[in-house]
Amino acid sequence: MVCGRCEMAVKTTLEKMSLPVVSVDLGEVLFSRELKSEEKQPLALALKELGFELLEDKTSKVIEKIKNLIIDLVHNQNEKLKVNFSAFLSDELHQDYSALSKLFSEEEGATIEHYFIAQKIEKAKELLVYDEMSLSEIALYLNYSSVAHLSNQFKKVAGMTPTYFKKTEDKNRKQIDSL
Image (cartoon, rainbow, N blue to C red; front, side, top):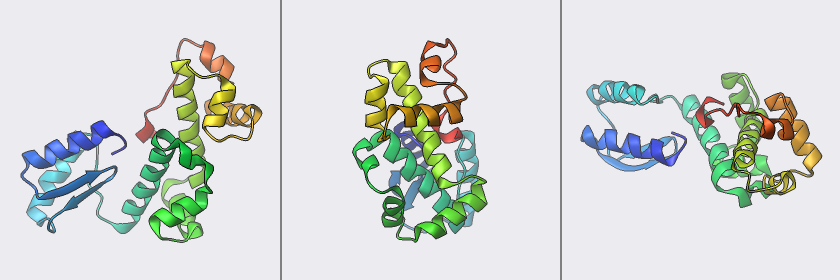
């Protein structure tokens, strides 16, 4: 789950199934009791219909938490972008960053940093489409050291400059959960 609508869709599904839900947050559902195996299969199918999957193993859960923290950080908590990123993840997940980084890279085939940058570039695209901020303001908002730094990363990830992106008809934006 990567957005509020995702949370609502999952919560509605869980309530329809009369499962003992305590809370639904980005990427995580807390139940008041352990689910029985006969409850898990229909839940997995219902989640699959919504485009989600039921994650039960520890590695998948950690990867999903990393992704959700990054998505939330970039798209919802801009003021926290100014903190040390590796320290932020370590503090939030109570694990050493190097262990998290190794696990993420092994499972996803890309580094946490690449995922973080991809999220920042998608946010930059969103802000460019809205056309309410200048490129300088976007660079500052996303905690880039300069417009040149943002432009260089943008070109590496998107294959075009921010200015060219803004001029194109096809904005080629990606869904957050597909990054």
